[in-house]
Length: 92
Image (cartoon, rainbow, N blue to C red; front, side, top):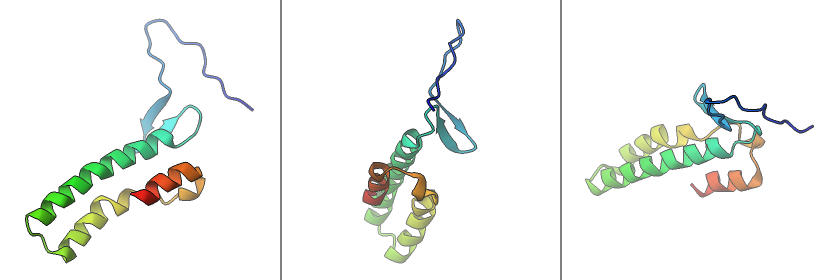
């Protein structure tokens, strides 16, 4: 079964994804956009962690900050991801 988007209406932009309840939903029901969003957010947070480490934050406290900023963002529903997206999250 293939889902087709309805025809667009004049002067209304038709999107292929939308942010809803903190997640990005795509028209094709894949998670690519959501995982890319998570990875970009985590990359920014990792830069922050690097700065904190450079400023001398103890490793124990850095670990707590890393868990709250990065590990908590990784989705628990990883079983629904493709192998490629799973690999990207694992690489993070």
